[in-house]
Length: 429
Image (cartoon, rainbow, N blue to C red; front, side, top):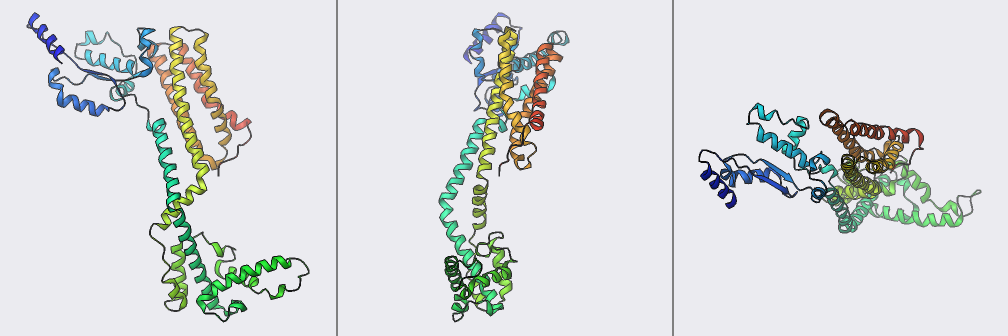
């Protein structure tokens, strides 16, 4: 700041009628700073020192440009889509806009106005959907949380679920025995109603072992099988309680709270079943925690595969952008066979994902997975079409634009090759 003030004083002394016009530019801004913060900081603390002029420009740090000045002094020509080139153009236009039409018309914009608007407001940060650091954070948070959830609540969920299912099962058996006393096995007939469900289960499992040992499923039926009375009772109870779906001992298709309310209505306000149901309560947050854990257990392969594809897609898009940048650089510096290497590398990089997406497109079970692949695919197509428009409309680089159109046609057509000529790939369940 002292040097700026000294320069202004020297200019004023040498030419008293001259009015110094000094502007501030923030250069090599790291991603930790935002445009809003730096503009606010300038307006509050520095603007009066620069003749109350607005902040002229903010140039983000682009690491790939730091050493390129050693190779060529005209970086904006070989890196036409860098933030340096875009913001330099906007800065020059802002400086010349008040110089009159004779001066301003000498400088023709090299990009369309939407690109200039974006360059003025952008700091060159990647969108969140392809931000690798954000994706890694999501992976860490989601899967570490899932692991901790299972570690902390796993034992409690298992014990609570087992207790709830047992109490619900016992209440259902008591209601069935109350409606039809002939269902009670002989070994349990002398017990109280509340003790009969446990007796029935113990009798059922012990008689199942005996039936297996005697071979009661064989024809003719071996001697001794006729005394096993709990097996037909189980079949009748299954039909009585659960519409013959065969899952009454481990019924998890409905929430425990809904089953408890249904049993209370079936048992009435009084009786042993109603008394037993008074202590059956679903703990708070049980269903939520159980649902989250079941979701991760059922879909862990799908979630893991989807997040992995998301990460690979983002990394692949970053690589593709780097190859595109290298292709433009090589083509403009020395248009030889060396310039074709990044182009061919980008084609090879996209080949396998495009073929896989085309083959998977007939399987609706993997639609979310295809969504992760479609994001970088659509971004790549839109970016290349936008660069093609700039190449043809503003830069008059027809050969470069033609190569970009060919690459876009490849991105669109190659999934169709995978859809029509490759066998269907198995989906994720």
